[in-house]
Length: 110
Image (cartoon, rainbow, N blue to C red; front, side, top):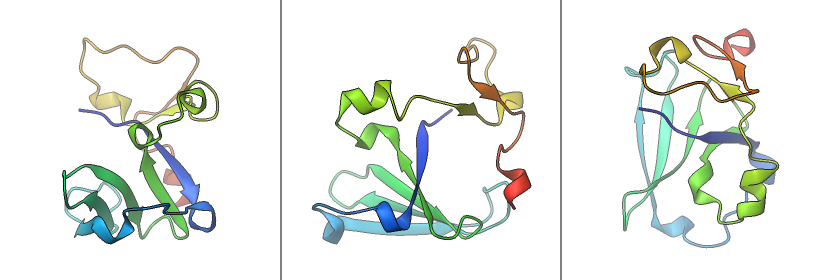
C-alpha cells in the first residue's frame, strides 16, 4: 500500500556487511515512468533493501526501515514529500506538514 523511502547518492552508499547476500529483480511494467527499476533484496529473508532506477542515475532508493538509528528517523529521515496521494486509501490521512503530490514528485526531474 505504501513505503517509506529515502534517496541517497551512490557515492555515499556503503555496504558494511551482507552485500554478498543481495539478489536482484528488475522490471518495467509496474513502474509509472516506464524506466527499469531494479530491486535489491536479502536472499536470506527476502527483505527489500533498496531500489535502483534508470531514471535516477547515480541514486539509490532505500527503505527507511533498514536504518537502525532511531534518531535519524526523527530528524534527517523524517518525511518531507508524499507521492501518489491520488490513490491513497480513504482511511489513511496525509502526513501533516509534508509536501503532497498526486503523482510523482520527481516528474520534473525526468
